[in-house]
Length: 126
Image 1 (tube, rainbow, N blue to C red):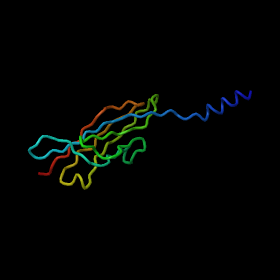
Image 2 (cartoon, one colour):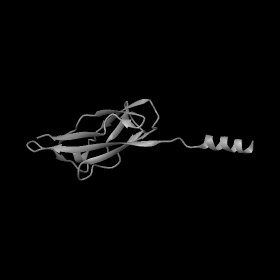
Image 3 (cartoon, rainbow, N blue to C red):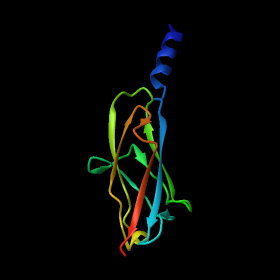
Image 4 (tube, rainbow, N blue to C red):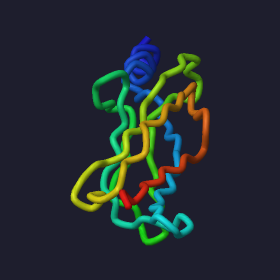
């Protein structure tokens, strides 16, 4: 009986199993007559669920020298619910003089994202 009670207590205290899905963002800038090139140091993309910031995902840090940002989503591998997210590009001091790209939508089911990578191109006003 004691062993059964200990087993039940331990089983109920076991943490939920969470995993992580990764979305890679490529950030580029396009000047009037040039080909797109990496846009570094563009800061924090926002992940939204509806109109509110989502706690299920984050895009920490600014884009690196290659214009790359990795976003992470908390997920449960066996979850069959589809969650929809909006990836909102930043508009800040660094992007002044460029038109910001449009918000893009993705979905997550279990730990599978609808896309593995997205590209955001900032276009020079000129």
